[in-house]
Image (tube, rainbow over all chains, first blue to last red; front, top):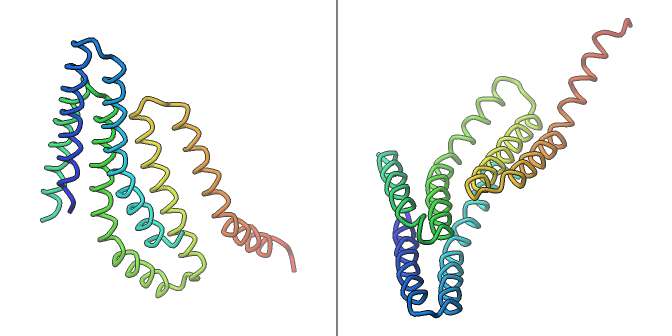
Length: 64
Length: 130
């Protein structure tokens, strides 16, 4: 099982949250937004392959 | 056993998502989707052998192979629709979840239509006086 992925996503979330707070406090809202979007895209890229794997497995198991 | 690992993954993910929810709710949602995918994937991979043996059992009991294929197709559609519906509900978009559920119902109906037709045909042949 690929449990590392969950921890990686949680770490990305924590880092992005901290960066977001820091940038908002120092008055750079635009960069904070960009950081959030970048973190989201990275996490999404990790999830997408997993979801595709799940759908392929279900497809082949149930003969869809 | 694998089920203990799966339960631990569930609890861990719930705690981490709760921690992240206030700071970045999007990442918390992605985390829950990832854990759900992981858990279902590890279960479905075991299900392959089970479906084969169930279909063998059903074939030995004299049910036509076409019907068994339709049964498993409907099962898979329900599985995918339920997963997607729950995920979208968790993201807070209830109307989208309802639409996906409706699409799943229509797809199930279309897939199972040959079964209904066969049932009706056999009923009419029984009812009609020869």
